[in-house]
Length: 629
Ligand code: ADP
Image (tube, rainbow, N blue to C red; front, side, top):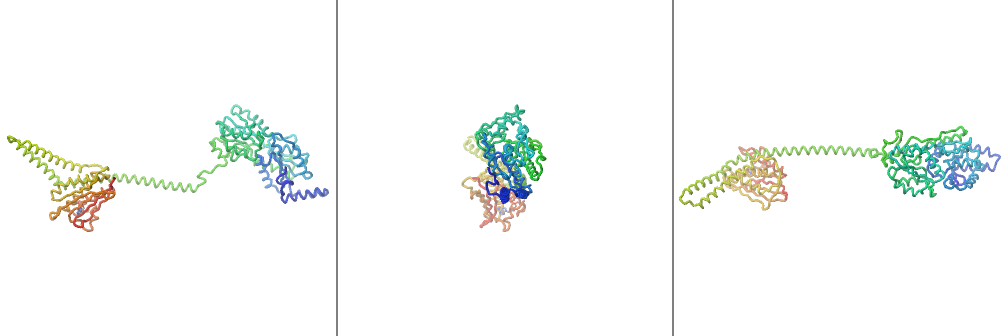
């Protein structure tokens, strides 16, 4: 198998051409080879990397990537890194390795690399087995290999081991710490010889947890079947991702494709102990760090290339680093941060909406704050207005009540007159009836007639009293549906006698249809009463020849209209607007409050009142109130 920069494959870099040229020269001119080679080697270092399964198998691929980057970064010499992958490790039943060995031998015969770096246990084994044939004197670094898989018996003084130590008990203790309810762990692991080795190891190490969790092994299943099962795991189950190089059906899984498909379908969290699987698919926990292995491996390679003896370079097996977790997975599986061990690190934390849109959020918050302030201010203002309105209405009701008293005061004569009339008639009729009954044969029919008259007059008198009472009733402002024609009729009933007494023609022409408005009936009656009394007063002057007061109601669009016209001398020019001002009066005994109260009441009913002079003579007051239907 040829590597990316192998001599046998794709275009080498200029440095490689130079290496090739020198190598050819060394072969052709054996006498001078040593000197040429030494001077060239002083510059260029050839590193042979042996991969275990292929170059894209996780976790090794990630270790290799990191090591290569470290080498390129730290090497003071130009490097020629040649990579080969040991395909045989993939096969459940490894085929003959001889042709591959032969290929390498022909490649490196007489020109061995400066150092051999094996990635993973199968590559280490291979290098140890065939080093005699391939590159007997080349120093070797056996990297990314678990302590248990290091073949110590075949190690030489020319070798450095950068091994790791996987403690599966620690991994599973962590799972139980993070998810204490876990009852079952579904073990995802492939079926290659290396993977099989680990099955037995893991089983042995986890024996102490035997009565706490059930381990369900998926190693005999094709990966397709594993995916199906992982989608329907019972509650309190988690998945343990060991390795998936080759499944039971012999299918090879490169990169992290298998893990990604498992993550997409699994209904349980996935745990692993390898850094290269962390970051998107697994929850996390204690794990082997790529960086740590890579740092030591690069260190070993550099020291050897610098001339240090491999025997002098020794490393302790690398253990798990402090646990780290993927914040997104913690969220997904509802694992609280308080569940994690105290020395944990949480990565991939997604910035909250506050961090991501900081100034926008602050702007929104500020707007909301201002808005809230405004709203509460407005609500407060509204509340205050309501209270003020209720108070104002109350005061209006009281003022109106006082005003009604004064209006009734003005009506006293008329009321007395109106009461006197029926009472006088009753007296006269009663006396007449008495006289008739004294007769020898009284005309009973006539007496009956007289009694009926008495009853009618009594009714008239009590009607006067009722109307008066209703006007003088002290009631709070109360809105209800009012029929305006009727309200006006009642008001006219009250002042009719006054008009009669002053020889005033008071006429009323109501609208044909009902005029329904929302209002306080007593207040509205007072409005009409006040305006009519003013009208009556305006025509009461003895010098007046025509004394007409005409009242009418009508519908005008969405409004009910009450028109009160008189034949008086009208309102002086320039005073038309003033008549509604409080205390404006032209009368010697006037208070100037009548029309002010009228306007306030009308406006409280969402209506309007206007005064104008009629072309003939006299004034016209028009009251408009919104109609409801
Ligand atoms: P007062 O009747 O106590 O004067 P009002 O507020 O009822 O108080 O009326 C204010 C003034 O408006 C009256 O003094 C009068 O000058 C004028 N006025 C009201 N109605 C008429 C009317 N129909 N014709 C002429 N002037 C009027």
